[in-house]
Image 1 (spheres, chains in turn purple, orange):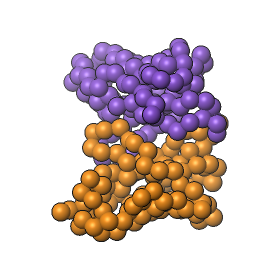
Image 2: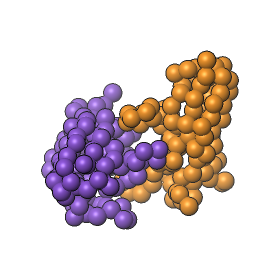
Image 3: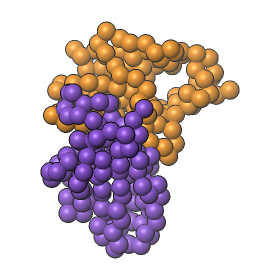
Image 4: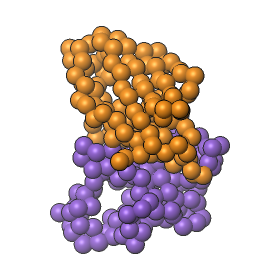
Length: 118
Length: 110
């Protein structure tokens, strides 16, 4: 099956620094990628949808200047958490689809990145 | 109110039991529906899609009722390995984005 690779799997950073998370589709071209965040004992919350070559669409309440998304190629999307603070500590997961809209494949998920800001 | 709602559980059942999970969604524009399984500290994995006609995959049966905006998952002959969080998911919009429910925790006891 299709594989989505997310890196790093775990990161600990100091408050005020920025962290970049990469999401790669390994054997297909991902026109659309999605970024989710999951706090302990809660479900996945969609943060933003990124489309290759265009600006990401952010969900309500998600600060686009804090969570920078770049989808420069059909196989790579990155999420940068800028000036991270302890409340940004969470499990970040990406997912990717081949194709668009109702013609797209099922969503394949990366392994997730556990971010801890100290 | 969350767009996709589930009973968080936990559901503690003995091995071999049959267990049913329910889910409701509030956005009638939702197009497709799924059940995902998530193990602790792991990414979610697709369990099965859900169709109005009902569909079965081994011990798992899923059902969708669009009129009442209700989705169900039935697990028969529960195994220890079924212990996980089960996520009800709706997709909608031009990008077919996935909206996750809060999840239902299942613990199958020996």
